[in-house]
Length: 309
Image 1: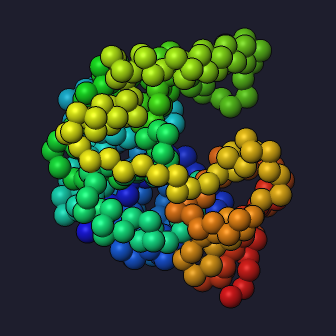
Image 2: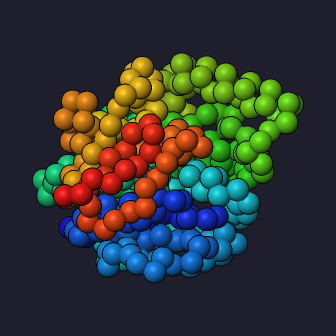
Image 3: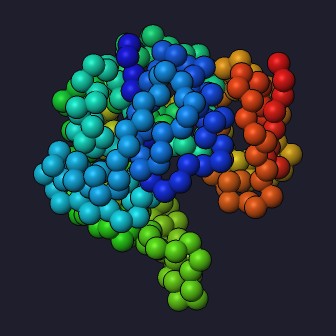
């Protein structure tokens, strides 16, 4: 099975990029397409392809392929469009059996250990979270039916064209959307508005089951409905960890270890498909040791450190 993972990224490269690429290289049966305005790194693995394009170029491509006017100005908004990547990037996925999407703020373990030949042969959509369709990593079988599933969302056109809000359409949506701000440092009124939207989002999740049963407006509800009615085969298991997961569990002394392509949660020796640094990356004390190719490394709340093999 040939699999392509698509990651649009606009801005600057994250300081942990070399570590991310090393974990890609350790998975030679998978390919990555990184569509970005950033300059291609001097060193990168053969299974990672870079397409240098601007955010405006992405808007033009998405508009052409989706036949919807797309005018994104805040890159995070692209997350809402992820389920339509099979159509937006159709020219790049022609030779692949599966396509998917992922993030740059994570590190892969041994993907073959989890995405086995049996799993790939028997399922059309693959989520690495059991309770919702995961946006940080998901795979779609490259067929017309699967590539157009997003169109079953009753508000997908409205969501795609609302440039001021992020709805988490690729996962579990928020009816009202979370406002996207141009600057991370919000003024008082923006902060109040943002907090009120977070409260509405929590209420949305609390009562979402009844709403989504009749009005599917995200990939979690779409996929659930299609599976129940027998039109797709859906795989969903909890295969990943994040620093936010540890935070919610009240675990402060966690450590993740990558060695020779395998990724482990040291606290319980659980092997992981990937680890996601959702919160730690914003901590100014999160230190990143310069990457040494083919060396093992650990991730903790303090940062990323080298372990020689």
